[in-house]
Image (cartoon, rainbow, N blue to C red; front, side, top):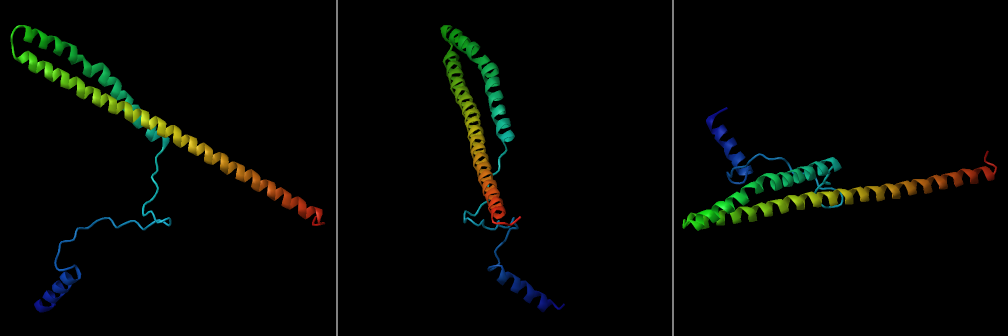
Length: 159
């Protein structure tokens, strides 16, 4: 291949790419689903929700038992330092108060996650049960129609 031919091929490739802009490789877009939503269904198993909720509950319990330990001793030390005239006492009290506020916020988030996932799991189970009941009643109706169809064929002399 001649040098001129190589330069022409490079130039043609750049023109096809949109004027020499960089293009990153990526995963191709998923084809749209028939309902037009453009995305597939989210699949979550009950065990996954239960495990996440359990971890949130465990974290909540550990925060309650272990992270709150520092608050009473810090408050006591802050009071002692303040009584002795040290400005550090007020600063330590502010740190202790802020720690407790942040800890409560984190514990509330853990409780919210646990409760939300428990409700979500129960709701999904309820939805699954409802769908199963509806599907099984349709199957019962279908079998009833099949029996009637078979009986009607026999009564017309179709043994």
